[in-house]
Image (cartoon, rainbow, N blue to C red; front, top):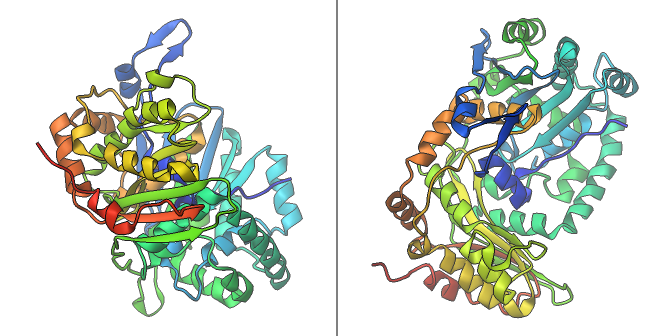
Length: 468
């Protein structure tokens, strides 16, 4: 059965990693010959970019696969929503595959299944994506179906009412995902009073009250050609993709009613905390973050290197004292926590750089101490570069292309990322981390048996250390 798989960036630390593409190690083998990292960079296919007259951009990368992923990445998400319509984008995602004006739901599902394809979508705080994984030969049909899904969704009243119940049930299920809850609370306190404080799913009250007209208004306000990128990766021909875009998306509007072009308002960061104490819960879920860099800020690379040095840990990891991260070794040796992850949730003009951890209620104070200690520039060692971004599969490549075009107006090549990482010296790393961390007010979110969490003023004072 076809279903929409949902990926919410702001709701999970793992997705913060996905958006920043943490460094990894690569060993490629083609037959018997080993391909070095430098050789693989030189052999990376070029991303081709074309724009239509209405402003729609078409970007593709021909990897030579027999399959491909094609989709529309749209510059809209919960940050563009108001308190009244918060959750509208997520609601539309649920309705996207429930039929179009040309294909009822059963016909749409049959068309996708007959191709052996997978149709999916996700909504985040700044981006929305509708995409399909299919055989390369079925690219024309895939683009046709995607154009219908985005431009001609049926939005029937009966389906809207049915999806209300589905969304409300999902909201209840998300409440059981304490990582999602903790990270949404972190946004709520860090960006309080601004749209970035809103969750992607929206409040249950809005799920009950959003009308068909609210959803139509949302589409008319935001689904505009200049804010869309038709992206494809795999066995795709760029000229063919451009021809398909002209055929199916040339009529896409680029004009706004009354010239009311939505402009993102600045979302100020506020050092603050939010606690949801529940002593009946077995473990405490805690996140601490400072304001990080926006997507286009050159400081993003040193901050990502810092995150990779702090790393992550899970109690199921082996390695003990041989773990690569100093904090991970400490966590394993003295049983500091069940898990932790360093993350950087990146947005167009701001970000959250933080550490999320799960621990026993008696270890909260110790874990918070060592987590903040890991941020001290004096703990960042001399290091060797050689870290880089690794993408496996056409869907990850397609997603990366789509977000890059929306964020930067171009796809940043892997070789350029590599050069930026290689340029990070220990001094640059310490200077940038000092700029964002030293003597800054953190945002803290805590859920569970959190009585032992230190007072905010104490956590704030720990953001200062003696510098040598």
